[in-house]
Amino acid sequence: VQPVESGGGEVQAGESLTVSCVSSGRPFTNYGVAWFRRPPGKVREFVAFITERRITYYADTVKDRFTISRNNAETTVTLQMNSLNSEDTAVYYCAVERSGGSILHREERIYDAWGRGTQVTVTS
Image 1: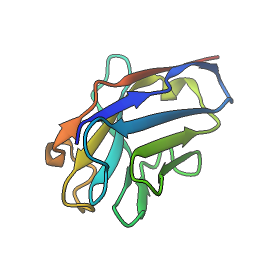
Image 2: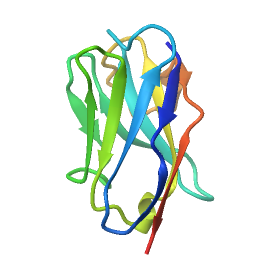
Image 3: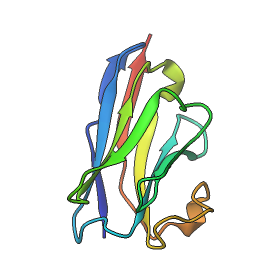
């Protein structure tokens, strides 16, 4: 399973944007899938995670604004981002882990594969 991100772009503060992660190999079935981001000049940080059973977890900074979901075919995981602000500007990465629902999902080290990222820029 190799994740590939798409859907990044430039939006104004307050607007919405959806980024997607698709698998270039087998579907995401039985995998846990996460979104991380790297803001300019900062370290990569956890954003959201969805288990194989569709239980979701969010960073406090995005909770109530972002929604992670996976389609029934298990081919795509999307991150719907609402009420964007300048602090959401970052490269967004998709990552997968084969346990399906690790309690360590906020830690980069547990992930088996990463995408190359997609840039999201929020202007004020």
